[in-house]
Image (cartoon, rainbow, N blue to C red; front, side, top):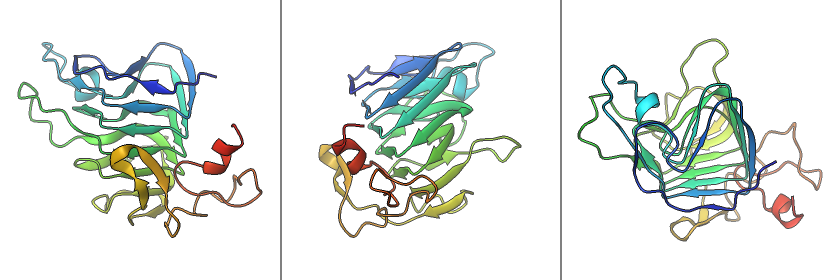
Length: 219
């Protein structure tokens, strides 16, 4: 298991995927309590390769090929790219659980073809997480067989057409997101709203987003 506390900004890498971290090949990675912030990935106009998720994806994290990547209690903020501003995954082999995706945005790049608005999370399975205050659409989940799902999560109100189980579209009430405090305040809709199948260390239903009890227990 890999633990990554902070990814330092890698400003505007060009082409490829994963402005902060690229997870490729058959790598198997788990990141707990990581912070992926202020990374960037810009579009690169390679002839014959105008797929946005190939040439300007995953501002924070990019996962491709047969790699597996699992993120638990991680925050993604201030990242930018053409597609998957925070993370561009590879389907259900990329999972986010108890994560926060906030304040990620489209990379300004006039060379990119007209591919329409991007999104904060692309092609990843999302559970018990908060995806809020990101530019344009928060999540890309193509409606095809075996595509990843989003469940028991809080998503921004602009995601009114997003399909998923037990989605909440209310303000999660972060304590101080502008200064990096993504814990949820008392009275938040996130409290005791996570998947009831996976209970917390106290035997109770946990909150959506970062799990403070797991952190205090050193998990």
